[in-house]
Image (cartoon, rainbow, N blue to C red; front, top):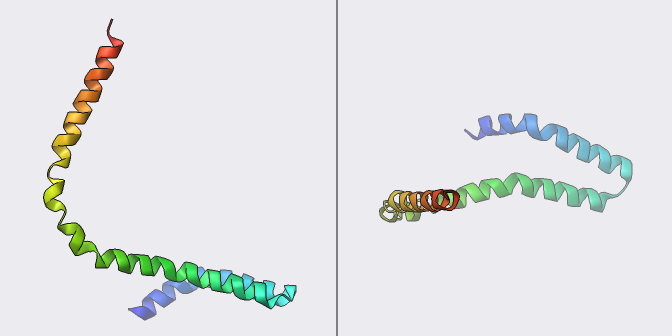
Length: 92
């Protein structure tokens, strides 16, 4: 599975890495290049960490389902009330 993910990401990351490495070679500023490479790596890793964190909290979110049964009726009341108030404000 990881090989397929790496193969899919290869097409996306190769041009960016090539540009960063070429810029590092041309500019002669290795510290700035290292900073750019580190920020690129963080941009690749942070979405995976975020997805893992969200996936770990799914069981806790599923416990909120019983509270979610009240959302449609409350939304309906709010919608009808706002529609009624809008209609009353337009009528003479």
